[in-house]
Length: 408
Image 1 (cartoon, rainbow, N blue to C red):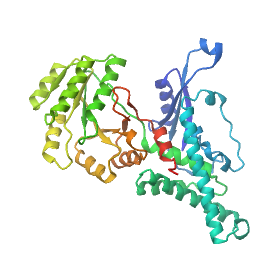
Image 2 (image 1 turned 180 degrees about the vertical axis):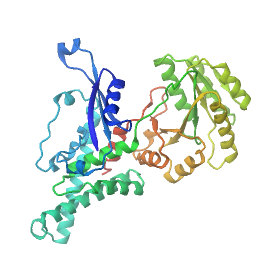
Image 3 (image 1 turned 135 degrees about the vertical axis):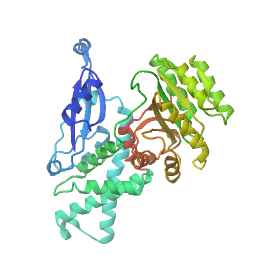
C-alpha cells in the first residue's frame, strides 16, 4: 500500500497531482485546509492537502519498518509500539477540526488495546503459562497477532460487519506478518484497508449539458422524500442551482403533499408523474434546469409489478437525459433484508448508495456490507429528520473509526 500527501491551491489541483503520481485508481483518504497561523498566514493564500492511497500488496511494502500513516484517532495503541519513534507534524495537531470527536474515538480504541492485554493475560494465567520461559519470542509474537486479529474480527462483527468480510480482512492483514511487526502497524493497515474498501465518495454532480435527472429509489419507510428535500435545499440555497421536484409516488397522498410543501418553501416547481407521458412532458418542460430530482414510490422488494413500472420511468429518462440513480437504504435494516432489497433493484445499473437513520443505531457495519456486496459508491448519509441540516457527504474515515470502536 502506498500512501502520500499532495498539496495544491484547491482540492481539485491536489487530487489531480495525487492521481498523476499514483494513477487513476488512487483513493482520496483525507482532505484538509492548510493555512499558517498568525499575521504571515493572513497574507498567504490557503492551500489544500490531500492524502491519497493506492493498494500495493508487495513484499516491498511488507518489508518497510515504518508503518503507514495512521490518523491521530487511532494512536490509542501508542504504548504497543515496538521501539519506534514517530515524528508528528505540529501544524497538523493544531489545525485538527475534529479534535473533540477524535479524542472520544481515541479513548474507545484505547479500550481495544486494553482488552487485548487483558485477554492475553487471562489466557496465560488460566493455562499457567509463562511466555518468557516456555515460549520463544517468535511464538509469543504469533500468539499476540492471533489474539489481536481475533479481537478485530469480534469488534467488526459486534458492529454488524458480516463475518465473511471481517475474516477476509483479517486474512489480508495476516499476510503482512513478519518477525518484529507491531500491533500498531497492523491496526493502521486495517484502518487504511477499510477506508480503501469504501472507495471514493461520489455525490450528485453535473456531468454535461442539460439537466441531471436524479432518481431516488428504495423501499418504504427509509426517508427518501426527506432526503430529497435536504439535497434540494443545498442545491437551491448554497449552489443557486435551478431545481425541479417530481414524484412518481401516486400511492401515498401524504408523500406527494410533503414534497409539494418542500417545493413551495424552496420556491421550485413540482409535478406529480402518473405515467410515462407525464414524465416525458416534465423533462421537456425543465430541460434548461440544472437538476430534476425524482421521488419514487417505496415498494416492497416482493412487489415485482411496481418495481418494473419504476424501471420504465428510469429507462425512458435515460434515452435523452443524463440520469443518476440513488438507492436509499436504512442502516438499521437487517443485512439479510438489505440483500433482498438490492437484488430487486439491480435493474438500476451503477446506482449509488445513500444510508439513512444513522441516528437510530451505533452499529454501522451494514454500510460496509452493502458497499462490498454491491460495489456501489456510497454518497450521502442522514442522521435525523431536520431539513436541510441532517445530511452530509459520506466520510469513510469517520465510519471506519466507528467500526473499530469496541462496545465495552
